[in-house]
Length: 344
Image (cartoon, rainbow, N blue to C red; front, side):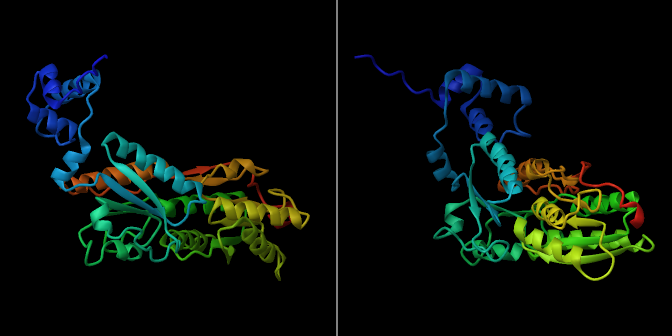
């Protein structure tokens, strides 16, 4: 019977790389920065890869009191944005031997319940996207008060998290509104999300700020749940209300914008000849509707990457440097045009 080859050990890696076992432990435990040179770290990683060495994570985690598991809490799984955030976070986590559990909060952006008997004993940290810090109190109560928390897309003035990563939502909505004003639109509707959240409050403030500086411009707000049919119904109400018909609909998300496009067509009108429509998020849906949506692209994967990097920094005993909001991109497509000549 053929004997199975012995599993390589950290001593084998140290011998191959020409370093000490302590150095191997530092490098493979991702604790080498500032202690070991880049060249030595590369030698250790190459030796481990060549030998097929895999550290005994269970033993190391028990020794360090770590689970090597973090939780990503999101309001819903139906929005592509959160899937992309997860992809970015999981990619960084995998590079450091950390697992990511994705948890959609049953209450949406409301208070999230702890899915574990004790989050503090099951997790090393929590990342929460598009939620308020106090919605995570169940994870940070008396039993888990020191569980590190990183917030994504959340109010920068609210206390609580160890670190925060935001995108420049305000600038994105300002760009959309200015784009419509530059085209000549003066009767606007803000099709707003009915979800109570900092990110949607910011969008409303940005629109109001831009409109204040535009003479003879009005904006009416109509709210709806983040669903296509709800967006359709709300847009239809806005377009058939009393007074002159609005010439542009500014939507808080691409899902609402898809519903708005349906409302325009249902009234026998055209996008953008009669009514311009804008979205937000640049989901795949934005390119699936006809005409394709003018919208705002958000760097969702980058948000996840930066959030996970911040959490790993906290777990390493360091304070993540505060970062500027990640920039967004105005994506111009066929759903916007100047208003009809009689409305210009």
